[in-house]
Image 1 (tube, rainbow, N blue to C red):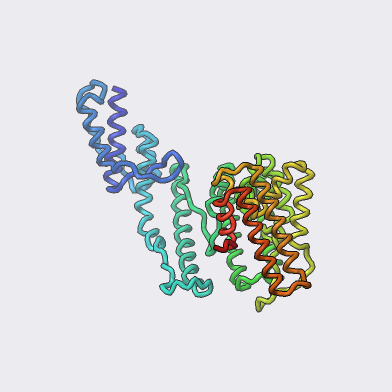
Image 2 (cartoon, rainbow, N blue to C red; image 1 turned 60 degrees about the horizontal axis):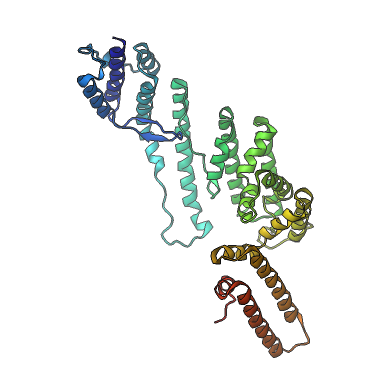
Length: 420
């Protein structure tokens, strides 16, 4: 009798869903995203067929049950009645989520429309600003409605549907943020999300204010809003949580990940290099190289600051202290565009690591000789051009002997230096 009762109650829950919503039931998949289950009517049909063919554990006819006995216009009362008749929690969740999604759908629909790019397709940032602003306002309105819907679901069922971050107007690595966000303790996520979203909006407004020019005033305000963001995150996260969060999605982390191809750092090495680069780069917006400040008209301003070369050397010296000379040398090579290109070609054409390194040293020597000829003022233009041509031919011959003609041509072609 207990099995039959449970079957009837499960069927009742599904019938209630049909009465309240004709659409598909929305539930959570294995990764927390909304997925559409089979329509409730199909599930009722399958359940009914199973009961007719013995799915009711051999018990006779099921007792008559009317959905109106638990139906209520008040969600809390409705849920209480469903629980009172022992309707499974999963079924209750399916019914309520589907009903609330249907309730909010008309309010969400107008803000899901995307404003298309201008037809001229010039790519001009200023011309495209109205479109990006219009899309941002739509996302902002949709985000507010979805937060309201989530608050209702949390109040009724204690659950929250996945909510995308409130993206700003400018492009960012939002996917990295989502990964960092999902790695945080669940009870801290919403506070961090709000801090991050507010920061993005302030950052975009700051770029508009200074028309995307990195003036000293812009840099000062940029540092201020970043310090404010950091202080607010420190109030929510432990030092370890904040470090992990930043290491997953910050500008420094993103740039570091892309620059370590070929170095293959261990987790500990990545953390060491990240903390070093963060200290050096963070004041400059997560950039290792120098971005020269400009005035309001876009003219460069000479200011006292370390050069890019000095900052890179400082970083390399500290990495050598912490990782040792051998790994520090491998790191330096991984930061060199010439070496990265040759290493990639080595993988493509099956070159040994020794051949790659010898090719790299050959390129360094060639550049030095080329520079010396260019700076030799004792040569006439005719003699200089003839010497450069001969140097180039000798270099290609030596390079081809070392790495193979195909690899040599591929490298020179990648630099626009292959003269057929």
